[in-house]
Image 1 (tube, rainbow, N blue to C red):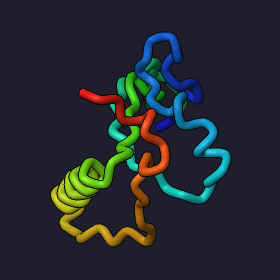
Image 2: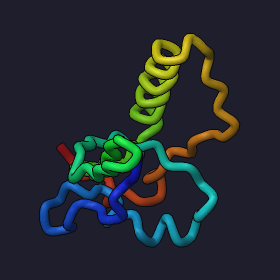
Image 3: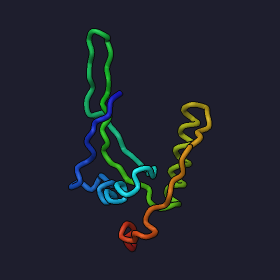
Length: 109
């Protein structure tokens, strides 16, 4: 499997990372929980090996900035991993809520 390098165009507003560029530069080692929607942008066919290799494209990406959203996303991740592998996922990193000092990430509803 391959992954396309391009993220969704910032004009479409489907790339939630655009607003976090400065945070990512300032905290390059801080993991970020995201919800991602993927599809297959193309398939490479190798006739000699009789294989088909899909290239995955990110259609929509939203970072989980609030602690409660991160917690829910991690539960979904660990549950899906366990269903797929029958093993317990042990994360060797922790997620920090983002936005406590950056209220512009959380517009009033």
